[in-house]
Image (cartoon, rainbow, N blue to C red; front, side, top):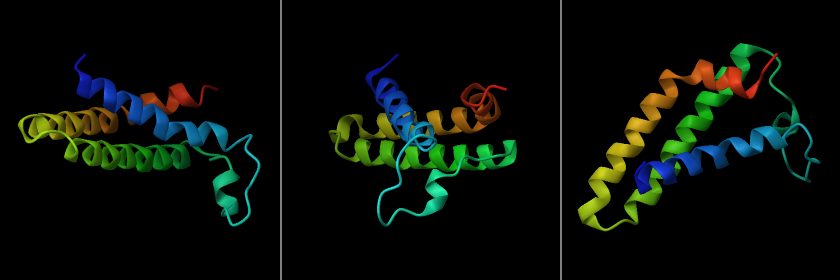
Length: 100
């Protein structure tokens, strides 16, 4: 696993952490109530997961922009590859995050 894949995996895991905490976190003043409501259907869970995967891609791209120009293209390609792979496996990721 390259350093880029490790970074992307870490970013993805961090992006999903708020979803896990939403069930037990105490609402903060000004937070929308929807942040603290669990997705009740598989469709809603999948929709949220896809948003999180897209957010992870945006974070990875941002991190890639701070890399030296010699490695930036590879970093961006790895980020895009991870995004495609995660989107292709979104249903499996959802099932793993929400076992029945």
